[in-house]
Length: 418
Image (tube, rainbow, N blue to C red):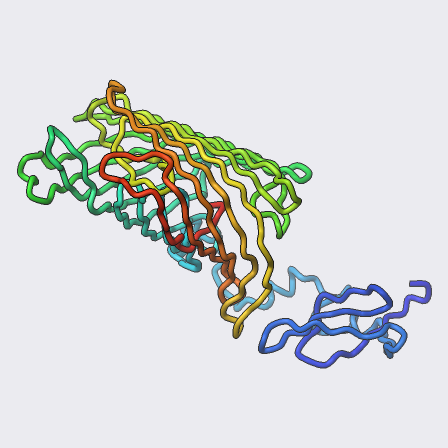
């Protein structure tokens, strides 16, 4: 800086990036066919070569110049008569680029995501499996963000829904179409993240009866509204944090039929994230309540039952969960740039669920405890996937479910849905 002299240090390879100097060494990364490779050299052994300032100011590449006007250069590069017009906000609305498996209890899902070049539309194709109802759903949606609030359109088809009505088993497939608006807001201050979302959707649902009792029930067509509000606040997480050390989230939803049925369902859930005994440990406390205010229950359960129990159609459900997560070890082991095992961790849990019918004449209390082992992996050194195995004990027994121990595999999940 004193003599205004530039220097360079030639390095081999295609390119050198992320240079840093520390402990009397110069460090940088070189791109290779196997990814980035870290290289370094002793600073006192570097042979710096002087570079004249004219090498930049007179360079025709335009990296640094005081003789060319950038706007004029771009305009003269266009062929004469070329039309100049702004991009339409709906330019190429379908552009799929990513896929993601996810688990938000009680639903497993696999989603393909797309965004257009201006990021004004977001499209999704997805499949989900509900552990409570044991139903499969396939669908798609598109969200337009060029206006505020966001506008969404979607359609999904659910297979193998079932419920008892008038002491008969009703089986049907369900087709839902919807349009909705929502307002997503977020704030960041220091190390704290906050997110608020409010929205409403209008659904039109058609049921297709099947099974031996298909002629005993009408094939229904009705519409309903679903309203939701969510709030999340958490501190910034580090790489070794399983969950945020401090944080909480609250989610509420209310659904009600507009015609044919006098049916509604309310849901409220909350989660609290706390630090564990040791720095990388996490304590997660969560609870949820769901109630259907009619004998005509046309909405599926959104509340997760205690682990190890099969979900059942209930007018009211209360559930509470305690999870203590801690790492066992960090293998940091990979294979052929395809599979990378980052961490092996354990979760010890206790679940409590109470389910009851409309007049509370029949109640079921479900309790379970156990442990889960998770493998946090990355595939192709990029995409994070988590596998697990669960073993537990049922603390209460119910008719038709006399077993005490249960074992389950946990499919690939993303622990904190976006």
